[in-house]
Length: 448
Image 1 (cartoon, rainbow, N blue to C red):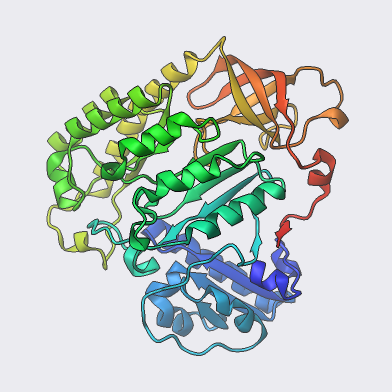
Image 2 (tube, rainbow, N blue to C red):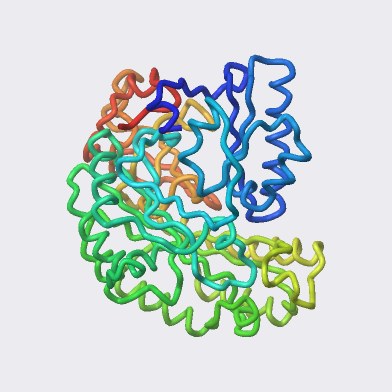
C-alpha cells in the first residue's frame, strides 16, 4: 500500500470503488487457504459487475500455488509472491514477468513507504523475515525463505518515525524474534534492540511477540525487567508439553523444562503476562500425551492461550508421519483445553478487581458506543482480552474525551472470562492524535 500511495494511487477500503483489487493471502493452514480463495473469488465478481479492471493476488498462497491460481482463476491478472512486494506498482500499471522459482528474499527497511492499517496509536514493526527452524508441522520456510534480520539502525529509525507520527505502542514481530541479529553476527540482538527502543521518549509501550522457548536468555529477561517502556509480556508458542510429541515435532524439550523456564521468567519479571499456543492432534498424539498437556496447562497458569487443531499440510515434514488423529478427536481436545484455560483466565482476572493499573485508551468500543475500550500492558492488540471503560474521571462530554493512545490509571470493577470492566481514575499522558482528527481521518493514514 505504501509503494502504491507514494506513486500517486489512492487506496480505498471499498472494493466497489477500486480500479485495481489486491488480495493479500495466507497459505499456512487449510482454513487460511480456503479464506484466501473465497476472497479471491469474491473480488473476481467486481471485475464482472463493478469498475475494477485488474485483480492481483499477493502473498503466501502465491508461493505455493502460483501456476494453479493463474490457470484455475482466469480473472486474476497478476500474482505477487512474498519476495516480490516491490513489483506491486508494475503489476498495477503494466505487466510482470514470471518468477525464477528462488526462495523469497524481500525484507523491508525504514525507507520503504508504509501505510498503517492499524489504529493510529499502535503499529507492528517486523524485525526479521523467514525462518531456519525445522519444525515438522510448519511450512513458513517455504513461504517466507531463510531467516534474515533487518539492520539494527533501520528498526530504530522506523520506531522513531512511528513515534513522531503519533504511534504510542509498537509490537515487534517476526517468525522468531528471539533469533534477531544472529545472522548479522550480533549477539543478544533482541536485548540490544529493546535497550535502544526503550530510550524513545514518545513510545510508552514496546512489545515483542513470538519467542522461541530455548532462546529466552537471562539477559533478555533482565532487559525487560529494567525498563518501564518494555511491557511485561512474553508470547512463547510452546506447541506442546509431551516430550514424545515435541520430539516428533522437531521442537524438543518437555513440560518440566518449560515449568522451570516460566518460574525463571516470573521471578525476574514479577507480574509478567504470559501467552502461549498449542497444537492438538499432531500425528501420534495419544490420550496420555494429551493428558500431559492438560496437566501442564493447569500448572503453568498462562494468562492467555490459543489452541489449534493440527493441519496436515502436504509439503510439511509431518505429512508423512503415521498415527493421524481424526478431526472429531482434535476438536474435543481443543475444547477441553480451552475450558481449562477459561477457568484459569477467570481466576486471574477476578484477582484484579479493586486494583488499579496503567492502561492505554483506544477509543469507543467496537461492541457498543456507550463505553470506551482500553488494554492493560499485558494485553496484546487483537489477540488478547480488553478493558471496557465505563467512566473517565473528569470527562462529562464526548468532545472532551482524550485521544486514542492516551495512557491512564484504571480501577478494575468487574471481571469476565477474558475481559475486564473498569473506570479511568487518572490520565497519565495524552496520545498525540487529536480525537476529532482521528475520527475524521481516512482509513489508511500514510507515513513517509
